[in-house]
Length: 250
Image (cartoon, rainbow, N blue to C red):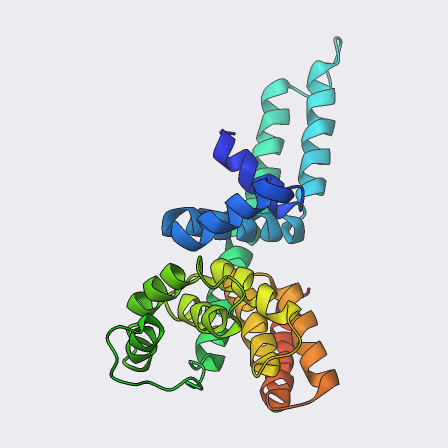
């Protein structure tokens, strides 16, 4: 495992803190290849848990113990390793199916539920106002261009809820859910703004897009419990997630 894989693993296990966490999350928002690598590793970890990783390890340990016995004559070594290969195949095939089923299902549910957030800021023809330029790009569905403008504005306005909100939705529109989560968490920490219900809804979608179905479900349930504009959408998406879970037995 290289240093980057170790760093991603620490992040997924919640072991990064302070400046290391801030640097990691900043890179998520600016490095598409790195963001994709994190997403893939997280999906693999989740799938391995469901596929029975511990059972596989225990079976291999038992086989290795038989091989290591100094006077084992009852089971030939070749047969033991053949058994190991069979065990691996039996686990890898369900894992492969489960992984791709989950990724494809998450994508389909996200695509069916995601709609860009309404522009509540408005636009004016003022080329000297970068936020207005960004919002015009946003309205024209140039989400990558808009995101570049939002990110350029954030260092000067780190506490701007509006900029972070639309940066997050732009991230989702171009397939950067982990960066969206980072922005939306900051938005949700601020209770006094005009986007609280939307921020929660898009956070749930970001978790879904990233493959974190547990956090997506938890966030959707919070939306339903509190009520508001997105209650119906959240309830319907929860029903779909429950049906998917029943199909795969999770």
